[in-house]
Length: 160
Length: 254
Image 1 (cartoon, one colour):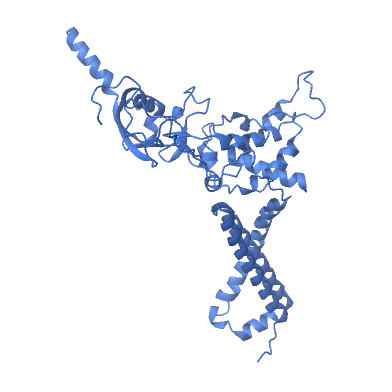
Image 2 (cartoon, one colour):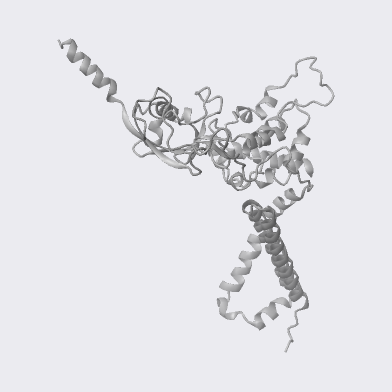
């Protein structure tokens, strides 16, 4: 520091040379996404509440469905080694397992997609990034759900 | 009998006996000097029973007058001096040095999620805008003229007692990870102050406030991480208040 005299109480020397002065003022710092009076208020009805409730309810159902699924597929009756075309064909002969798998497919996909939507809303800052990420997410979700449902409904055990 | 000289020496020794050396590591930022924020260390002789704010005062008054921070009442009521001390949001005027391990450097940073203006001072406008958006005032539909006292039972008052304690220091909102990532979220403080009126039996605009908080950036973004409850210097159960607003939204809709 260049000044050697003791500064007056409460007035310390400013470190470094100021980059800005009266004629050349410092730029205003804008918060990345701040809430102002002009912030567009989105009115989506009760969608967010429905999504929140769906996460809780589907979560509870999925605990039963997924744990049951894992137990049957991986633990009981010799574990993974028994899984084959014949095993799947045998299970899907019963409407109970068709409904079980269909329910698990829809709930798990929607539950996961909604979770990812939340994460995108939280972390993607630019509107364009959000748009593309969500577009990708929704496309993948719809594709997987439709393909899975198609297979469950049109499964043919006699296929060659 | 000891001589007066010895007395004085002993008295001086006793007077400084309780002082310990503490390092304050402060996040400094001055946009007029540099675009980057830097850590700066200050060594202080201080009584461990003093508060962090006293340490900041010592630095500002005796060592470096350019240190900038907010404080008004200095006794935990005005809510000006919320800052991140040792990584946790606290009021500098309510944090004793002996309680935060003075053997290690004490880090002091501005609260997160709001634009830093200088040193420990942040731009509070977005915070107060969210507060204004929940209409934090009594609204009555037919009897707008205050012709007589609005009476309330002790039980009705007790219902929202916890959320009346808020001093708007922003410690909760600036500890919320959802708010850090997306400043459009109302934040815990605004929801707490909406809760204070939603559950007030004298107020008649609860439905309107619930509708505001049912928004995309409203209560449904809360991830119940409990950072806000941990941060609140007034001991408000913030997360519980947010959950009560969620419950009110669900039960009043169905």
